[in-house]
Image (cartoon, rainbow, N blue to C red; front, side):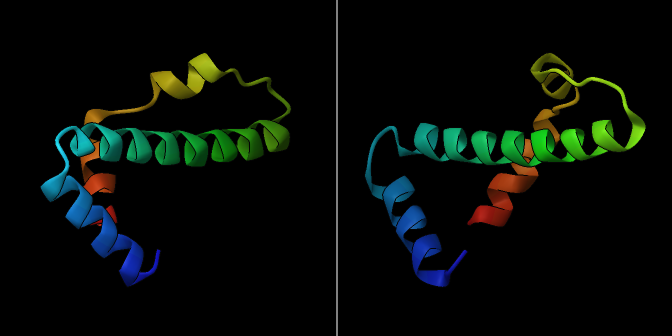
Length: 72
C-alpha cells in the first residue's frame, strides 16, 4: 500500500464520523480474502474440501487489530 493511500485512510478516520467502521470493514475483508486464499492452497495440496465457515472459525480479533495497525 502506498504512503499516499495510508495518509488518506488516516485523515478519513480522523475527520469523518464512522470512518473507523469503514476502516475496520476494509481490514476485515482484506484479512478474510487473505485467509481464504491460504485455505484454498492448503485444501488443494491436502485434497480436503474447505468452506467459508472453516475460514471464519480461524479468525481472531487480535489478528484484525494487528492488520489495522499495519494498515495505518
